[in-house]
Length: 271
Image 1: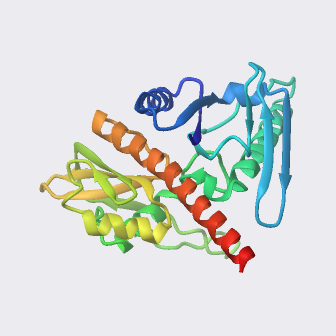
Image 2: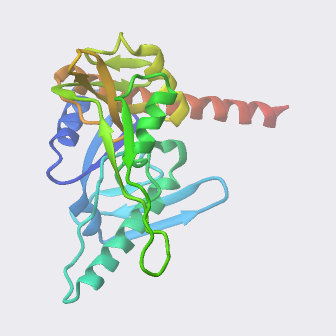
């Protein structure tokens, strides 16, 4: 039976619910490992090779995680706590070291890492808000109308041109919001069927099967995409089920690819 590790903050109720849901299905071994588990681990061993990595993490409660026993890792981590030093700069540096080590480990998991990982953080804001709007529009999703007004440039007493200031304007939006959860080919949400082609195009453009797109209705009644995130947040039982099923399918597909690779290698060796 394959093993899935779910990483998350100790207060991440979604990670805990996912763990319990998958465990109840009886198809995978699954374990929830928190940020505190990682920062109090008694031993870390990580070896990087040209095409793969080997690792072993001994947790303080006696659990041992390793590349030999874990098939896939789904990370929901947003940050890691660190010991507080007398100087805030030292505390920030220690936390940055933790983030660098964990992110380095996760990035070298290759296909065993489920979902996206931002190179600058453990969580997932993959781009600034304006760039995300541009990516949504490029995929074919309707986005709020935006414009910018700027003031005329003026010269300072030294004859230099001052920086031009301006203001962004957005069409009026209502308070009615919705979202669509994309888990591979499956889309879950009230607007899934309406924007299906564009949502799948966004997945292809970003190279990410697992993401969530947020929509807000305009005053005129049109739905506009306003943001996306790769750190998904299931809001309903259906979305939680869809995410759990995606994770289970992902781990099983890894095992199938591994078996095919082993069979091909043995066949080539015999020839």
